[in-house]
Length: 600
Image (cartoon, rainbow, N blue to C red):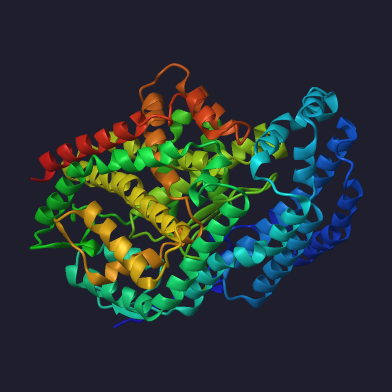
């Protein structure tokens, strides 16, 4: 019997790791910029009380703040990526701590900016917007002005700035606990090898054909969460309290409204998503029953919902093979798109594999003028990782086009749009894989993959979104958020979204404590709206609609220059209605019918 351990970064060649020298070619260079920032930022106080003097004065302070922000963005980008490499590295922790402390001081020093902009008399502000000195700042200034009802006095803004690092600490505490301190042990797989069970490797056990192995992985994994459940519940509770505090401090009616307001998303969009999904559970329950029958199980458990239904298909895909597949899939977007992405993935944009202390999951992270890096924990035996790579590549290409097309102050797109670009790529990948095969089993495998993608992104993320809304409402009405409350509310949602066809093990109630996004609330609904918009946009491109590719690339290039709903309308989809969500749900049902015909 062979025992395998989690690799360290030293075990991997440089070609498998991202190249951060595009940010700083040595840690000393990071320190130089950090020192510059320390010395430069106090100069911003010279503009205190002067922003209403003239358009030129306002433009000058905005440009100076921009120089600080660009430096901050790059410093934070480098420090956060290094910390993602190894969450236990004391040098990386110290660097991030240094920066966070400095950011608190900078926020305090610059806290007068927004209140003073808000205080400029309306007539003068309109005249400022027409002044050539502020021509490049019109969009940003209009967005700032829109926040006027929720911006506080200078003194109050200073207090909030001073408390920002403390209020944001719960996500860091969660990451340190789950990525570093918690140990999940080892499991002997179906080939007799001992493998380390981690947050990243857990998913690879859930797709194994061996039902007993999946069951062991599930119970062993959640045993560790059960041992830390009270600590995690406390962290989640205080994270919610922080959200509610910020919302009330800024005069929002709820934490949900506070989260949606900046993107100009009406709460009706959030509620409409939940309502549309809840009206369409029947196909989902049909799929659960199909899964039970095909797998030959007397009863279906949650740990049985990820294994592919077509066992004969070899799903082992290397990272290089995955790169080739997604580049071929994205060919409809044109040679410029694929050439840029090819250079990035075959170069060193991507940190490919799991190593000891590395952050779990995957993400794309960019800064202005730098590569849009991708963190992966790629595993060749987890076919969904091919989709994850396509997903993160969508984020990175969105960043690439936005920073090449917009000014710094307008390039940073909101997450609502980011989840469209990433999921759009997954839709192209599915179409490509289906087009290249006539094999019945392979087709069933790919359709099963798409169904699971829609299930996980639309149905599951909507359940998560509903949970976030519920627990924030509990806090807002003054009731206690205890471990039992979290578990009972989550249990009720599990019962609604899984129905009677799935056995819900008691340990599954603890899932609500292990979802990272819950510690950064009201994010996950954007996955669900994102896949709905992405399906609509990809259908236009794949159908060869005139102008559809140009519209989509214009969407990527627009960055954050417009509000999300306006941006998507220009690209051809209206998310203010339930139509895109209902269309995605119909696609799920059509694919399910085809899968039933292939497998039964």
